[in-house]
Image (cartoon, rainbow, N blue to C red; front, side, top):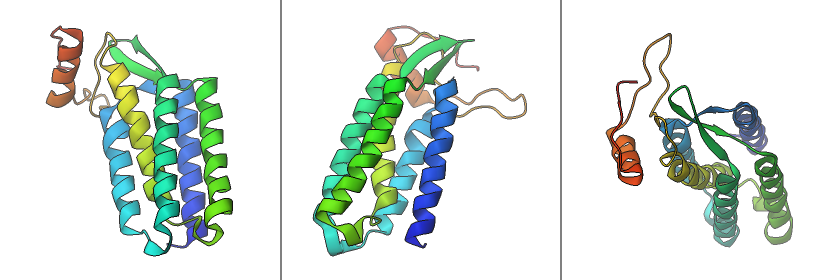
Length: 176
């Protein structure tokens, strides 16, 4: 894939995710954990080994920003589901992480700035998702694996249910 096309697609995806999460959406395990992991694996297969130091520093920086973003995301219960919502500080950290990535590319490896972008974004989103999930399991309400479509019930996950039960010390109805 052309680096410019990849950058535009990733930027569009980030804007879409930010818009949805600014409004508030259910904490869905699949979106928070699985999709960023898949993005990272795809990015890993596209890495060019000519600037591994740049890539390693980029991933570490992205993970650090992802953890910080995750700490700023508000989790709460609505209609029996755990919800998440970006705050103003989350948006500031997104802008800062993008600026840091560009600055790093400018200083360390201008020619390799697009190298591993999917890996870097996936790693940051996965770190954010792990922090959000660790907060979400503490909230009253159900953490779902995937949202139901066309009126179907949400799908749950035995792993998420047991994690939530261990953290909260309660059992809840998983028929949602």
